[in-house]
Image 1 (cartoon, rainbow, N blue to C red):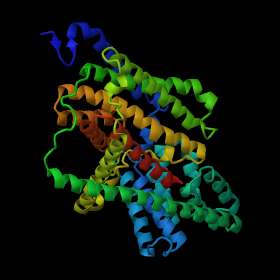
Image 2 (cartoon, rainbow, N blue to C red; image 1 turned 180 degrees about the vertical axis):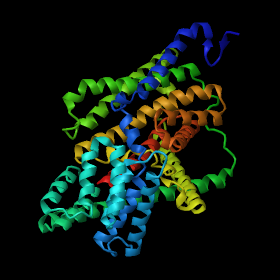
Image 3 (cartoon, one colour; image 1 turned 90 degrees about the vertical axis):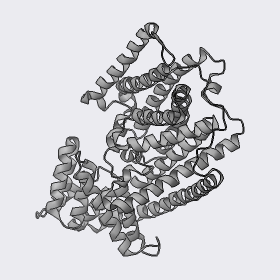
Image 4 (cartoon, rainbow, N blue to C red; image 1 turned 90 degrees about the horizontal axis):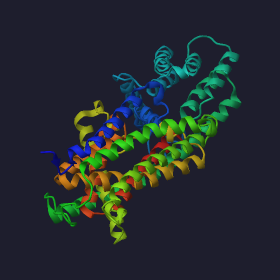
Length: 485
């Protein structure tokens, strides 16, 4: 038999299958070439997200805020500050002892050890960081010398401090506090101390804001889960929309779109970097990198959506409506998106708390939290309102629209035409996670994708998923900016 409902006529589809295989092969080859990886639009996100230091960073910064602002200002005690610092050090130590050590964790451990007077242990961590990140070896050598037990002159220490000060952020300020204290320069020490105090105020305010939003979502999630359990028990309620999905595209079209997306992401990222790097100068201009990333994302989105619309238009006069972009009863759909994400967040937090109670500190909670796929050092390094605005538009507006149209509207819709709902949700979530090229956060992204598929299955509209997706990315962005502010 030469025909299958998910593919069509095999003989007619052979050229297309060959083209899809060629795109997957080219994508894998380019990703495997180390010298090309830095040019990929998702590569720096992937490299940085593997460091897995955000959870520990937040713990350390919370301890710093308690120390800087005083016990009454943040409703915590000095014992809490010490516990937060110990938790942070434990988290960084886990990352340095992992199969693939993190240079970011080694750097933080070195500063923490040096701050506490353990110069030998600090030197070991800085040496490890330098071996993992050779491009910044001069920086690691300078900070290692600054924390060494050797009797260095004030002039030498001042030179090391100038090298350390080339990087900005809370970690640099902590190191400079120790170096300037060792030199005895009261004016510079006072300036850094004031900067650390201002950062602690911003951190405490931002943390309270995020905690308030997350708390409201948690309460809404508890109410949503209670209502659902009370009304329908633990049975999966039948969908309010028509079943099955009637869409004009097949599984082969779904595979083709995923291949095009990955190929466009790799090749588009490479070409735009080569063409625009000298123009935008991302290393010299603060807006250069976010603008370059925005251009890359728009190109990838445009190419992928063009293929999707080409396949849908061949059979449907209203392609966006067919993809699920329906806004009738918009307020109810928005409510569905908010309550759906709130329930997802509540369940995730509940699982994390139960797992932490069962496994203790041996469990890497950062991989299970809803922020598991964050790329803190990239977006978190944003310093200007322009950078933050560009990242907000990319992460919280464009990404939910494009990814819901692609993965829920087209990919999940095509899978749902031929598969039962549970199978389609699982495969759809896995495809969503795989395309993010983040092995460390595959489970978390897959669960998020499965939740978004379920929202589409329930409502037959992409709007709830877009709202939930935007909420999630907004919380992630806020945490990243808070962590590195």
